Image (cartoon, rainbow, N blue to C red):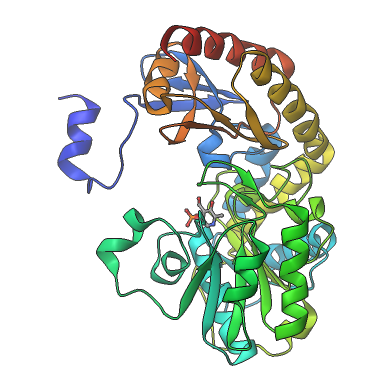
Length: 381
Ligand SMILES: Cc1ncc(COP(=O)(O)O)c(C=O)c1O
């Protein structure tokens, strides 16, 4: 019996997987169980920012593993406080809460919005994706993800993404928050536009709701800035983060302004595992590597190069930094074909490929990818 057969006997069929079993990674490269090598342009879905098996990451996590893994938030632990201090510097926000995933960060942010405003209504956008738990799903757009689980949390209104007029119609004095991805990821890499972002903050000032940026996918250098909010010159009231935060080690977080933190109270929200010493050490090591190897800058530079090369082979790219969407005719067919050629890519819909490689990627690796993509799109698409 092979691994595919064994998987089908024991795992709930929630996932449609590519037919490959990965056993090892190094830098931007993955190795399967048969020893074949692949260039990884998915990075665990925009997660493994520093590349696979980074020696500094391994040594820091290993050292912490031998000291202390978990004690809960009934006590103080040093890596959690150090991580929050570091995040203050790179986000400009004041106080932090740690959890274990993006959806959990969104859940916490929605609860914070209700608590601090005393209001109920959430406003989200067409195309949005915020996760699969009931609260996060309630502000997620796609019918296919929501339908079987209704009724979800209400009231929620969806305004058209990048449509100021529709935004103005949907927000009011009962709105607790507007939750927005500065670059929509799961929708296929669609950036918000500047005027639209400005309008969200103008509406906030008029109606007194809070603005939540969901930076779960865009954070930690992905878009060529530490956080995508920097492209817009704005500071949200609340920001979610996860994915690249631990470069593959599960950790999520919420950052808030001081005025918001002041209205939050002990015991009203919590997580058993959230912010444990091991996860926080993984995140601190990730941030150190991003800083030391100047990966935010590399993301911007390599992103630009990648988009230029995609353009040259006729794929019409969009996005910022190393968060790139490209239009093709048959994205779902291309994924297994690319895999056969040693390239790991992801399709978000029939007409969109999403490229979110490790932020350490270099020109030679991008050239390798482009050569395969050029060949495949010429022959199949
Ligand atoms: C913007 C955004 N928010 C939230 C999530 C949910 O994160 P997780 O899968 O870690 O729960 C995702 C995942 O893709 C995301 O892209």
